[in-house]
Image (tube, rainbow, N blue to C red; front, side, top):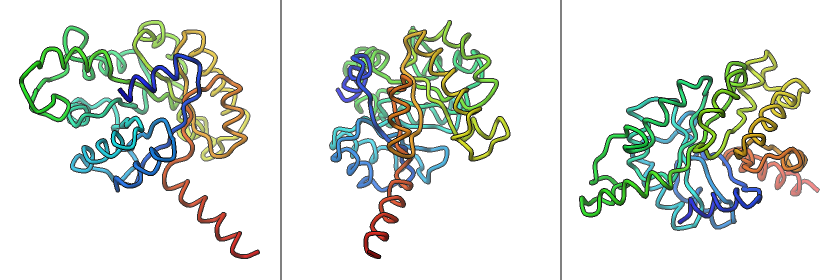
Length: 256
């Protein structure tokens, strides 16, 4: 399974590379898969996707062997249930700031006895069939990849408590660099030493609890620094940024 491939790489100390997906054409996620990226996060917070796009994006990811994850807008029960029923392999939830939010997230993501997720066997996640529904629910509980984004001062303040209670099942803690910078009055300045220190503090705490830690990288130097600091779940920009960067480089080449 793709999700186990991603988990196994992270557990074996390998760095996994992915990106955020804002463009809703399935060809885009397919390209990243064929290029060898480990995962792509379909961004329903900032991207133009809607639920009618989601299943086709996930299918395209599966065919090109890249793990599809989805970012909802937050800890919202109705939208998370619909996202999970589309068959995503995992979820990356933004703007987490408290233990209580993670308590609620666990209830929403997992079927009983772990959580309280609503169940219909006739969804894509359910295999469109009532046959073997109980076993499929157990399999989903065992395999769903769950990550949270820490993006502000309150989240950092409560991170140790979150890890104390939930480190056994959270797959990754991701540093939301741009919102973190904004939260400390440094809008857009993700290279500022203050932002850098807060990111490193998050990484150290996650490593202490043996939880994978992720971050955005905009260039090769940021990737090297992230890997050196223990980040092993790295998003290189997003699809629009990669396209823009590539076009700028081609434009410069054409002007030589």
